[in-house]
Image (tube, rainbow, N blue to C red; front, side, top):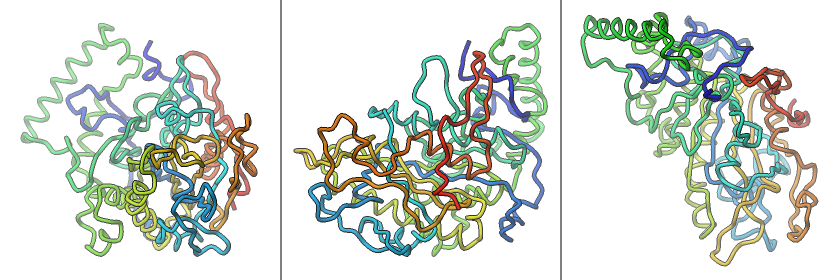
Length: 437
């Protein structure tokens, strides 16, 4: 059995179709329900009754906490960065993040996150799902859980991954229909959503495809697909609805003013963050935007100068835009990667993998702005068998997941019976209540 595509016993309904159809370009993550204009109106008015959403800024490769949100300037581990004051009294961050410093009154920093995974692939899985890899099961990411828990949606996919990296967001045991819909630089049009033939011909193609697929279901030749039942007549209607929806315009950042586009930075990541804010306004529930280049085993400082110049402007502009539009009440922004970097600088002027105390930044959805939870030691003992001894208030990745889900009003400890009959909580941790207002 394909565990990734099998369905759990507890699953909310939805209209969807298999990604291996004629319309595969708009497949994964396509989970529809009707949407009237009230969501857009709610976004404009700051109506807190609108569903909560999350934007994950994923720093692929593992950004250094010491060069971003947890500097220790002037110490043997501090490197070349300096600390700068922020809009939150008593909180300093790296001088490579000056614009983000101006938004710190909206943000909380969890500086004592730990995990047991120091390999990229395993750590990415761990941080994105809250669980360590398990050969018998694929766990869902936050966006998949959020979409699974709610029937509200949009004409376009409710779970989106922009500039997807090594492990895009997945539905896991909740089903492939909760996978993220993937796009790349928003400077380019969304692929595969514009018909290349006239309507009558397109309809004939869809009718033929339906006929072939349904006959295969009836003959039980598509057993995995039959279990998913991802292709049925309503799904083609939903796909056509997406293709004709004005909400597709949310992907098109070129309609924003030049000043607004410039505020996010003239980079794919900056455009991705701007698109994320636009998508949230039309009812998308989760957008993940990836920024790579953080695996700094050599020349750590210079790579962080470059990476932070992109991250800083986009993150600050995103938080500012959401706050200005009164959307931080219902939108959670999470910024982090699979682990941090070692306190010691190696012989190649780099920092290596460090899962024993790194930072996750959050804003919105009741997160206590201008706050810090946990702390790292400026003079850590690197020879200790228990690295968490160097931390104040250490927390696990699972605790961070429980906190995120609680902020999104998702029952983080709800158990789902997986396709292999195993009860599994959404998050096997404890919410960090001091991070939440």
